[in-house]
Amino acid sequence: MILNFALLQQAAPQQGGGMQMLIMMALIIGVMYFFMIRPQQKKQKELQAFRNSLTKGDKIVTIGGIYGTVAEVKEQYLLIEVDNNVKIRVDKSSVVKDITDIQTK
Image (cartoon, rainbow, N blue to C red; front, side):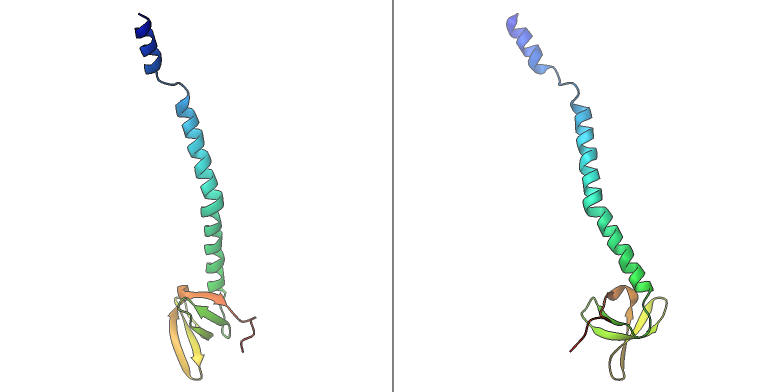
């Protein structure tokens, strides 16, 4: 009889563990949102605003590392002058940095 009682105590499921698990999962998701997802979304919005504000004469760098000066701005693309009378067309989404304020040697 004592043996049967000991087996029943061990086999009984723990109560309240499910709610603690849900709280921990919610906390993990909240931390991931505030430290990973939200800053990335903010950075993407800033980059999009930068790309939309490009004007003729801005000095820029593309994702591929091409330095140039904006010669023409269209809805989907930019015409960039990379040397005297050498212009290339690039997609607006390939522009990553404005170097207008940086002095080049």
